[in-house]
Length: 190
Image 1 (cartoon, rainbow, N blue to C red):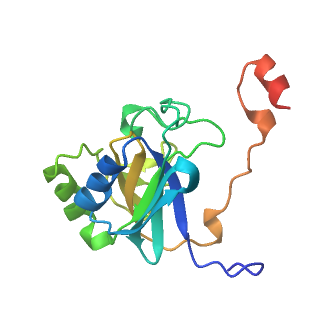
Image 2: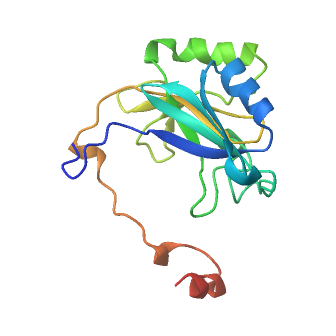
């Protein structure tokens, strides 16, 4: 429980779209998220649209007329995790995971496939050395699958399978010094 600030979740996560119409078609049409607020930004700067993703939370998108194109592998992963793609740059948004009910998880994956969305295999995330189990067992803490929106933004449907306890926080955090950048890049970031 947060004793410093009374936080109740994510108000919104703001991403950048190359084509707001296509973004609406995907997030409202395919994923069923209602478009709840639209804004034209002042002085022709662009647009800002909000989609209700449940629980009082929103996924929002900016559209900027002069936004640079995405750089896969830097601004976001170049593909899905089962394709060996997970890396993105420091300060980038790696992926958005939407919480779904455990009892509807498989149905939702099938429904997305029926809508023509390419989805990853189901990943049963656990604490094993490879981090994934073929089967659901007591060590699995979340089940998920990944897919991408029309701009290549990596999305995930995930469902928790157990509650966390103190044993789930057991790893020493890495520092900037642990990164494996070439020496000249380490010096520039230090």
